[in-house]
Length: 90
Image (cartoon, rainbow, N blue to C red; front, top):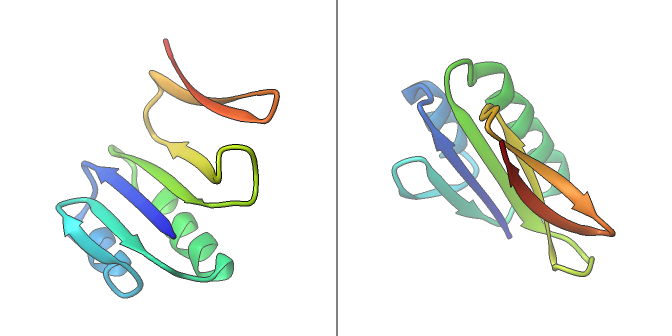
């Protein structure tokens, strides 16, 4: 399972995500895609997300059962605390 949440991104970036994922609400995308497709979509979002932000969450065989990546919001960042991903706010 892959979830992507985006804020303040262009319509074309959102449209690109709809090729692979279902947009369940504006800027919220959900679906099952391969890791290769997930990485390509995430790279495209990062290139086109100049003034916005995005969060990528996907299934992973770890303690939490998922992996978490963030891009674009300088007030928040993902930190790894002994294998557990947490969000740190400035």
